[in-house]
Length: 274
Image 1 (cartoon, rainbow, N blue to C red):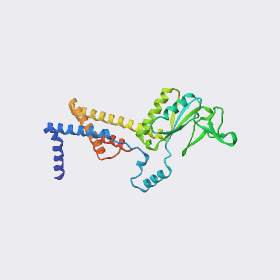
Image 2: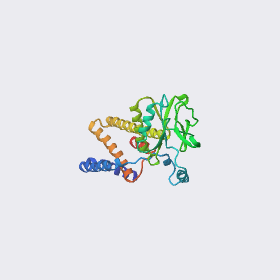
Image 3: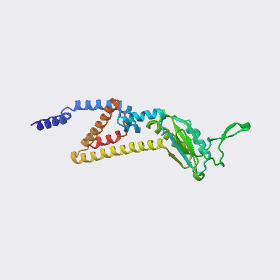
Image 4: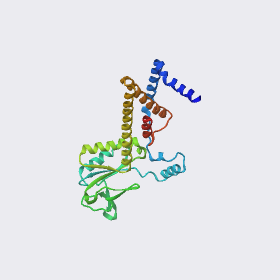
């Protein structure tokens, strides 16, 4: 009884676009416009803090810890294989220091030693290539400790401290892209490390995998539609319907003021598969 009535209503709803093509096309156009309006404003917050349950004791404690001691994940390491005092290390440091979000930098070229000066004074001077200073391999920067000269003088590194106002994915991604472009232009073998790079690269891979998953899901759906409809027009219409539903869900999510977190991209892929 009730199940048959429910099934009948669902069938009528699914057949409605066939009986009202103009209204269905108008509704689809409205959804396209709304999606085009809201989707570009999507915000992404892939910070680890989002893994804490909102307003939980852990989230409150973590927030208080950051307010008291600051963050410890703001140091990017850019190392070049070869001579630690190579001129390209200096060039990269000078150019990276001008990028948005960079607080300060230190390298073998900018590291200063504190030495005794004339008349019992204390002065600073640049580190010399032939010096073996104990702080060179283990420079203390803020709350972190990183090396700027590789073991056996096999590499030279630039330590880049990121501003707290730029320590989120979008800004970190732009900064890392800028550093990568500078390193590629200078040539040589460069390596990027540090927690900002780990987080940025992880999100890059996550988004890349999600795009592949969505494309594969739509392709598989199209394959089954070909077997079911045996008409290219219906296949295109069905795939377009799935894509429209997906963008509509994203638009509604954005319109409600929510940010996409680490779980957002996998959730989108699941929606497409279902």
